Image (cartoon, rainbow, N blue to C red):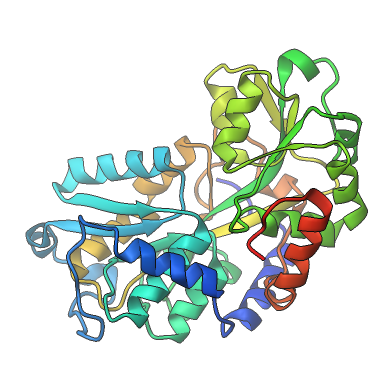
Length: 372
């Protein structure tokens, strides 16, 4: 078991996310969601507004009805290797297929909202590192209150009191480095990275994925730090997975704000990489999940939700290098307990309110397209 992360960080996160729940997802994300809705041939249309009967708590799940429903449709931003492992074990146990759409958190949220607006709600369960997005789904009446035994293992700041969403994981943005180049003298702090001119890599997509953790670092430490990192002319790539590939090949020496689970997996596989949590603080992102109120397959969805949040599903998540939000689940093998890490919580309110200015500032600092 691991101790809960710093209570102050959780309260700061919960406060900022709660204030933001009424704010709208940007036009770009909604348009992406509509586009994705038209390119999901494996999902049949399900009219939004047709309330689906089904369980409202774990004890009401009918496994035979779940099997008869045949499948579950998941929208998620979680790493595909972990999703595939969770799904394979679920299907093996229950014989129920899991089909899923995987995208960035903004894409997942935008897709759910766009389909609801179009009257074509298709997902049974949603999971994303975008708690403010799930709060917005709740406000629009898209999520279903559900009582799960997992509630007792999750800090109150990491779950909706009405039961529409619950945190399943925390992702920390770390420093990852190539051990062949830096093994004898790895960077210990964020500012140490400024010494690696031309040898850094980071991720951010043209739609702005990756920007929130940069903002979290800047707002908690300083914008001057980002300027120092940008002055090294870092390589910008699309995803955290590519950061690891670049480092494993020795094309760069270190990556900043990398997903800890991806860095963990690279090290566990014996690749020439390692990672660390700088003592001055590490940006954290909370991932959460919820059931869609109008799920076409309510029993299969609830069964899958319980599997995902239960000991079996969370154990698979941890085996993939993720920190579980459950206090009764150990951290990934060889990982530092969350209670020993200084977590820098994102300020969702300020980020959403000032997003255009923030993205402009990031573009001015690093160059390139940031979705602004």
